[in-house]
Image (cartoon, rainbow, N blue to C red; front, side, top):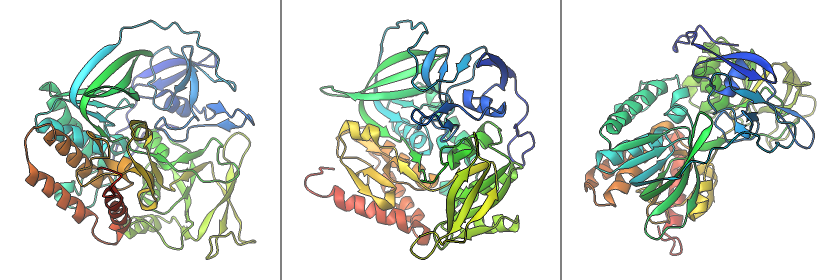
Length: 486
C-alpha cells in the first residue's frame, strides 16, 4: 500500500516504527499517524457503529469525524488520523462505547500565556495571518491540531493559478514550505510562538482579554494552557461534506481531503481503483493526483449537467482516458466489510434517478468531492453572529472588509469565512493579521490593507469567482444591519 515511485514527491522508505495493534506487532514509518500506518498495513476497519455494528474506516483525515476513534495506551477516543505514530504504542479498537481510561494521567500544572494575537489554524489563511501580524510588530501565538504546518497546502501537488503575487506556477506543497520558512524566521526572533498537535478546547470569560483553553499533546500526555490574547484570528478551515446513499460508511469511502492526506502526505495508497464523485476543481485535481500515484480512476461522476471545475483540469483527465459523466450520481455502494463496488445512475433535469440507467462499477475506493462546510463551532461559542449563506458553503460569521466579526477583537479568514481557493485564503489571512495588529496600535499601514483587498477583488473576477463574489456581497450587506455591529 506504500507509494514509492511518484513524479513529484520523494517517498523514500523512512525509519520503521514498530507498534502494537490488537495484540499483534505491526510496523509503520517515521512521520506516520496511527491511522496511516494501519492503512499501509492493510487495516481498513478502525471502528464500528454503535447502533448497527457497521464497520467504519478512515474518512476525513483531519480529526473532524468519529470514524477513526481508537484506544491508544489505554486512552479512549483518540483521533488516530491526526495522532502521531510513536514506537511501542498500544492501539486497540473500541467495541461500541469506549471503556473508561486505564491509563495513568499525571497531573501537570496549568500554564498561562499572554499574547497580542492568537491565530487558530495553521493552514494558508492562518500562516499568512500570523506572518502578517508578526511583521507589524505584534506578539503572535499560532495553534494547530496537526503535526505539520500548512493545512491543505501540504497535500496540493498541483501548480496554482493566478498572478505572481498569489504564487502562480508554484505547487501547494512548495507554498506551504515557503510560508513555514517565513513563520520560523519570526519564531527565531521570538515574535511568534508555534504550537502544533494542540487543540483550542473552548472560549472562556475574561474581563479585558479574550481567553481560550488550549491542550497541547506530547507523547500522549497533555499540557493545559490558559491563553489570554487581545485579538484572535480564527482560520479553522472547513469539513468534508457527505452524501446520503446505502453503504456510505463502509471502509473505502473517503472524503477527497482524506485521499490527498493518505496519498500526498503519508505516501499510502487509499486503494487500487477509484470512483470519483464530483467534478468540481477538487474532484478533477484529486483524480489526476491519483493517476500520478499509480492508482486507477474508473470515472468521475457529476450530478450537475456541466463540469464545475476548470476545463484545463478536465482536459488532463480525459487525455488520460478517464471519462467524466455529468448528470450522473452514485446510487449505492456495496461490500461486506469494505467497498467492493458501486452503482451509478443517470439523473434527469430534476436531479431524479432515471430507472433503468443503473450501471455497476467494480472498485475498492469511493472518493467524495462534494464540497466543504466552514468550521464555525468556535466562532459560535464566542458569540459571533452567524448566517447561512449557501454560496459560502453554509453558516459563516458575518464580517467586514477587514475580516472583523461582530465580536470586538475577533477576526476570521480562509474557508472558515466562506469556501474558496487557497489563494484567496492567503490574502484573507494577510488582511485579518494586518487588521488585528493595526487595531492594537502597531504599524498603521492602511495602503497595504487596501492593496490586499484589491488583490482579493482581482482573484474573484471572472465566471469562476461568481459564487464567492455573491457570498461576500451577502455577508457585507448583512454585516451592515443595525443589530450586527460589525
